[in-house]
Amino acid sequence: MAKWNKGLIFAMEELEENEAPEVEGGADSLETSMLETNEAGADLDDMDSSIEEAVEGAEEIEAIADTMEDTIEEGGADAATARVAEVAVESVYKRLNINRRAIPSLESFGTRSSRAQATRYAVEGFKEQAQAIWKRIWEAIQKAWAWIKGWYEKLFDANVKLEARAKKLKEAAGKLSGSPKEGQMDAGGIGVALALGGSFSASNVVKGLKETGLVVKKNNTNIAKATEVLGGVSLKSDVTTIAASISGKITDLAGSKLPGNKEVKLEKTRFFDKMKPVISESGKSDAKIEKIDVASTSDMSAIADAVLSISEGVKGSKEMSSKLDKSYGKLKDLIQSGLKETTKESEDKEASKQLMQAIPELNSGLIAMAKTVNSYAMGVAKTGLDYVEKSMKQYEAAK
Image (tube, rainbow, N blue to C red):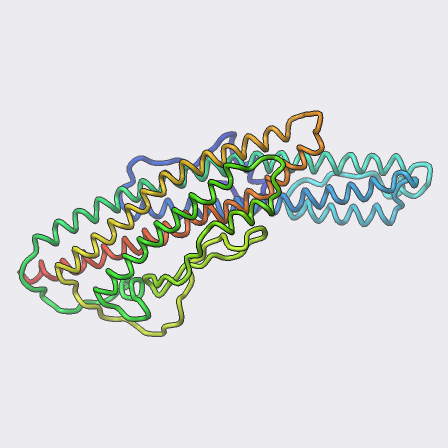
């Protein structure tokens, strides 16, 4: 696994060419599959942060190079200016964990006769380093796409297991008869995880899981609208215009009361007014839930049905992932074409860099839409099935 916290350049040197996360076909359990899905999602978050940091670093170095280059017509930078540039670039190198590129000695900037040549040499070195960073950024973006595909595969593998468990428990609940041995049981983590407004009841569990299923489906619609916008992107597209168009089409998910006293909000990012979904507390509840009611057989069946609805929503994400993959593929082709040598090299390369800047933002928004909402939904769905299974044991113990 890449050490993204050490910087993009270090991480990319650690990774082998075209490495993608392994997708195991048969995890031993639903819990294992969901853990793998969450780990893959965390890797993508770290990768996006590293890409964003590297983009900022490359832009800083290019700005310093431009400032230094402007002094050449007047004879070049003096020693004080060169020192300021050296310190600024050194700071970027340290932040990105890359080896320092030496510039001419400060003595070379001390005399008028040598300043211009020393400045040209320093500018050339800065631009070469910035170009090398952009190359690494592009490589990382391509690996991010591979990571996204791997994450989706893990998600769908976990969802198959979720659906199978829900069907099995619904069938088993239908065969139960009689009364449970106890009317209540220890809550464990189930009470807090499935409570609505700080209180727990089987009917609230059903209500919360049904609402979660609706949020998953609304979320799929948001992703579909965003991918339509991406389908019309060109090298002439302005990042802020793309962001405004996407933000204007998607629907805020706030207001839904979800299990665990949660709700979904879409937060503002660098370019997007509303894009990044966050699962947050819906009000404050200090209630401690130590005991929960044993679910009736009808409640068990209703909970299983609500979980199956969530599973259907996650299945719908598969179609969205295919559309998203096509949109990202187009972005990839656009960036690649802009990076090639052309008659409008400077204009196209600048446009490609602008699109590359948008990728971490798109990942933290579009991919987070799928990752945050689906991961949360599958987590509470699994806990709902845990509640069903725990209740069933009370009926079995009464025999």
